[in-house]
Length: 374
Image (tube, rainbow, N blue to C red; front, side, top):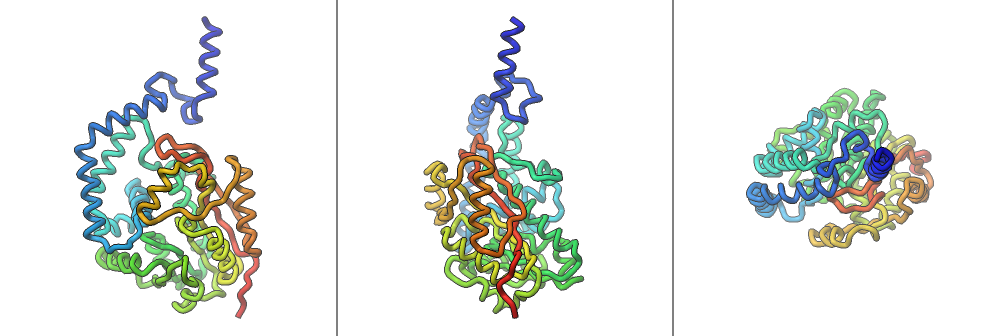
């Protein structure tokens, strides 16, 4: 009957995602059926994916130094996708990965093409849509752990562009730099030449040596970059920076992405206090963080332990934005000198990743009161 049909449509609307409001609610459009299609298609593409991943493992084992971070390479892969989707600011990621020899390029392109095919035919999101968030004037909530990269790239690039707009000399510091390419974006290189902007990349020596070799091989200019070897969990990064020419009185953009996960709450709190001591008033810090690790599937955490990169930092909050904002704001303000400017969260559960809502967040803060004076 007409009433029964209306009731059914209303029920479907309640259970659908916002993105599905304007689509037909046929069986083929449901997440469960899409996952079934994905499983079938994955099996069909195994002849491509299995040897491709084997090639990646071989390259990682025999072509890269032991001790180079796997997560740092994954971040580079995301930047590569961003560049391939038409963002010229991240062209350096392609050159570093392809020409620098950090990955078997043709194999990577084959994997990416396969994943894009699987995404198109199954309807399940596998490749981040960076255009979707980069074209938004305001940051939208995103879904899935993979989408944290959207927010990270947007936040870090925005902070750097805002500093460049001031047309004055500043410093860019990247803690746990890994294979990040912000220092090699065209506008940063131009600002280094015109305004004397200096970039400092802080990370373990084994990763830095590998990166420098890849930069040289790819022909990427890094004369404006100072590499500061430092184990962030064991050494004083502030002292190391000063030893390498860092100026505490100069405005700084400090990028601290993908680091807090692997150090304890006490060390993160200590780092925040060090920011107040080592950064000039008005300096900006961007960092991301995990929440509620007790709700994350143990298999995910075990997998990170197996590759030697366990998650250690954890803030607990209720699974809603207000509670998470309060938790991170209270934690940041312990430093007594830092003020939160904005924050966002990956607040929807992903179909594939399996992470619960509000597992990941990112924030931008600034130094309101610097403790260091000459």
